[in-house]
Length: 141
Image (tube, rainbow, N blue to C red; front, side, top):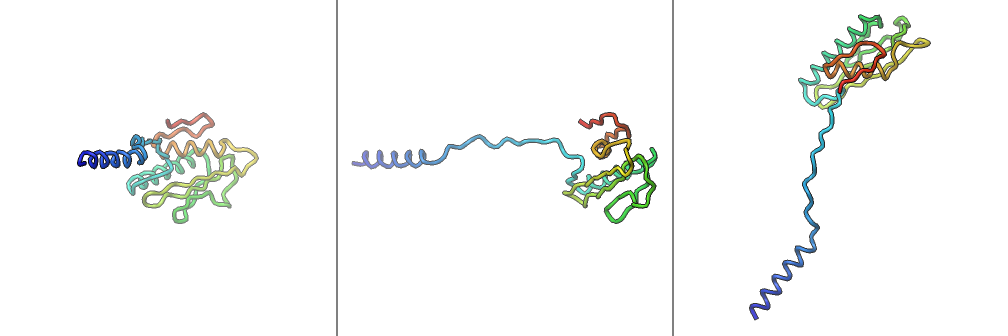
């Protein structure tokens, strides 16, 4: 009789284990290339603000209008002379866990660079691999 009870208890335990979903593999950690416009720490954001300032100064050095600052916003003023360089709008990241916003707009008939080309150059500056201000392909891989 004790054998029968032990057998029934054993079968009940096995039945309970069989009804649970199987344990899968642990999730694989996916590492994605970091976005140059994103910063996680205060130090990284501060460094990228400095790189942004270098970008706008270098941009002005090649002939683009100087930008103005209003708080965390850098922008080409509306009364700046219209040139063949796109007007800039850059919102600086906050202290941490934040991102830089970038926009460029051509105010002339045609511009030397498209907004997408200028964005790639800006991202290269943030990644500390600055590309030249030219229409050549800018890669930061």
